[in-house]
Image (cartoon, rainbow over all chains, first blue to last red; front, side):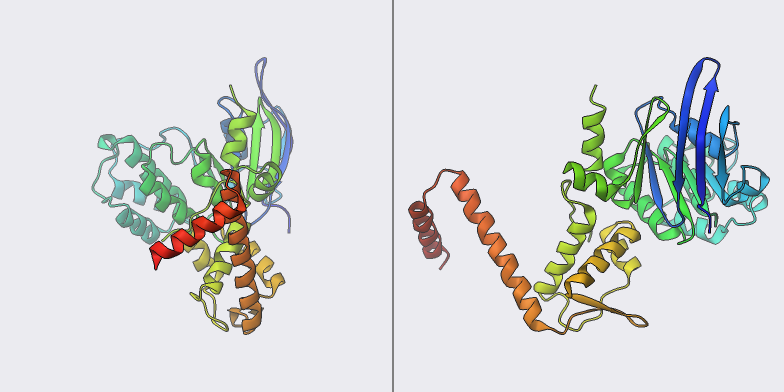
Length: 232
Length: 122
C-alpha cells in the first residue's frame, strides 16, 4: 500500500518570496504527525498545497498516490486556520451543511462531541467567542470519516481543559488507516499524542523524526528542543 | 486519572516504567489481563502507537506476554516480579544516597540521619 501522503521536492514561490523550498517527506497510515516551525516558516502554505487550494511552483503532492483534486477532498478533512464558515448560521444549520456536502460526515458523532463540550445546536456562530468557534470547527472537521485530517492550528484559543478533551477526541477518533497532520505552536500540549514531528524553517524541512527519537537524542521534550533551536 | 509524564525521557520509556510499577505494586497481579492498547492509551492520554511500542518492549522483558487471540497478560512468574521489585528498590536507594551525598553529607552523617528518622517515625 502506498503512503497516505507523499510530498516530493515541493516548492512554492509567491513572486520572489520562496515560501517552500524543495520539501520532501511522507506520512504513513495510522500516524499522527505534528507540523512545527516558527512563524512564517511555511506551515500553512504546505497545508494549502496538500489540500489543493494552491498549486505548487514545482514538485508534487500525492494523497493515496493521487494528485489533489475532487477525489482527495473527500479523503481529506481540512480545518483551515481562518474562519471559513458562514457567520450567520447556527450550529444545527452548520451540521446540515456538512451533511449535505460530505457523504462521510457523521452527524451523531458531531452531536456527541457538542454535548461533551457543553455546546448546543441553537448557538449562532456570529455570537460565539473565539474558543467556542474553534471547538465547533474542530467538531465539524473531526466528525468526518476521512483518511487524512489536516488541522491548521486547531486549538489556539481553546482553554486547557477543553484542549485535553479535544486531544483525547483526536486520538480516539481517528482510524488505524487514517493519519493526522496538525500544525501547531502548542507543542507541549500535543507532543504526547504525536508519533512524528516535521519541523520546517524558512520553507525548508529542518527535521523529520519521531517524538521519542528527539527525546532520546536530545534529552529534552520536543517543546524544549524547539525553544533551544529557535531561540531568538 | 492521567499519567504523569516528564519532559526528559522518551514517552514510551516512561509508559514502560509506569506499567512496570503498576505490576510491582500489585495494581495488576501476576496472571492478570491488561486493558487493551487503546484503553491504556486513553488512560495515559498518549498516542496508541506509543503505548503499543511500550507494551511490545515490556514483552521483551518477559514481564508481560501477549496471547494472540485474547490480549495481553501479566506474567505468572512471581520470581521475576520480585526481582524487578528488588532492582527498582535498589535504584531508589542509590538515588537517595546520591542525593544526600550531593548535599555534602558523609556516610556517618547519613547513617545518623537515618537512625534519627527511624526513631521519629516509630
